[in-house]
Image 1 (cartoon, rainbow, N blue to C red):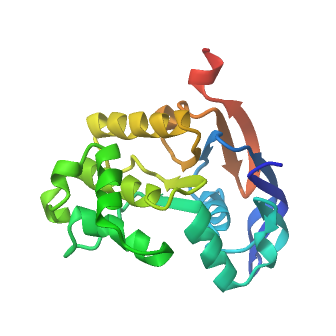
Image 2: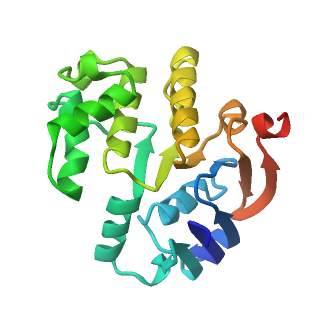
Image 3: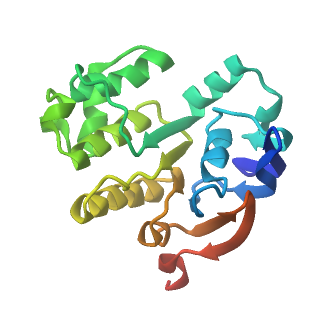
Length: 225
């Protein structure tokens, strides 16, 4: 069984069809990129995969559970237990240190554990910056804290929305190297991006246009293998 199975999903906002009969399977341990112009449905698709919204029509199976039929409380539980979210804007709490920002995710899942949070920061190469506030971290360091926060509850899926959008070239490489390591460890990665170089690192590229899947391609790293 696929980890994620979208079957003919559509999302309507009044007369606007943000997604139109989209079907997509994501296997465990797969790395896919989602691309498309503004208004193509990327954010809507991300919100459904991330259990932040439900399709108007169709089935959206997460580990066999149709999230289209679940209530808000159940969706929150699925998102908490199965999905790690990485955002372009970081969404760090300004008055908390790096390790405390990671521990916030633990609070909603189980119990905060500073030792475990420090281990997560060590995975992203930031243990020595654990006591720094966001204002004392570079953009690349803040993004790596966000990845540590996403990893802390051992999710089955990392869902990243433009994770390199605010990074310079050097920090973009660091982020992609980190994602590559997570992929090698078996983590399922779904990355929404506008950057072809970021998309090419994925195994599969899903291109949306006007709410539909316009094209499916293999990433350059796979095609060149």
